[in-house]
Amino acid sequence: MTKTKKDNLFITFLQGFVIGFGIIFPISSSVLAMTMGIYERLLKVINNLFTSFKEEKGFLISFILGVVASAIVCCLILNITLNKFPVATLLFFVGLIVGGIQMIVKKTEKKITLPNVLCSIIGAAILLSLSFLGSGKDAIITTNLIGYLKVFGVGIVAAGTMIIPGVSGSAILIILGYYAPLLAIISDTMHFTNLGENILIILVFGIGMILGIFGMSKLMEYLLDKHKIKTYFAIVGFVFASIVNIIILIFGYKFNLIEFIIGMILFAGGYILSAKYLKGE
Image (cartoon, rainbow, N blue to C red; front, side, top):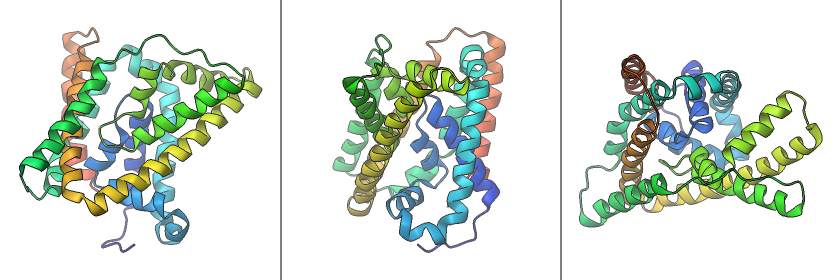
């Protein structure tokens, strides 16, 4: 894989850090990767991990460290940001996404044809439909064969959909009723509670996630190689729909004027960060 310029590993770390937040929060981490211009590169690294590791190790290690650091921070501040300042937090992510839209639209080469536009409309419709799916009750995770198979399947679905720009793996977990139970299991594990059962559940879920990531990465790389323009038009639909989905999510919260103003400041900061500093291309 040829790189046109030397990587700024600090920027790569920041990119991983931001995307790590997208993995934990109900935000599409793939959209964040797309708006930062590193989505295709990540797909290629995942799909050619063993052959490209030597060449891409600096990028990959910095990126993974950013994701891990973000996950740790999320565990420490998740209750504060989601429970106390959800609107301000979500507006920051909207700013990140909006800041990178121009780069994504450029990928379509502005080849506006009926089939391409239909790809955008269908992509947007699929994503918007997620807003109208009820999350229902939280699932009860059982420690028997059926329970482990369900967790394994949920891991495949959540991680696989996470690779699709505009689709949030966390949102899928919320819809399936597994988001809160899995967070509780992770929290209990960090507090050394029910370690045996919890670690096994996390391992089963993690194996499912790995399979989902590799499987969907192969599919997305194929689509971008063979049907690049149509795929990017669909991604444009995904991205705009993801913004609408987040806005719908925002209006589901109660917020006051001060939080909204802070949120708009964070929106502007997210926009500038994405548009000016987090570009990978």
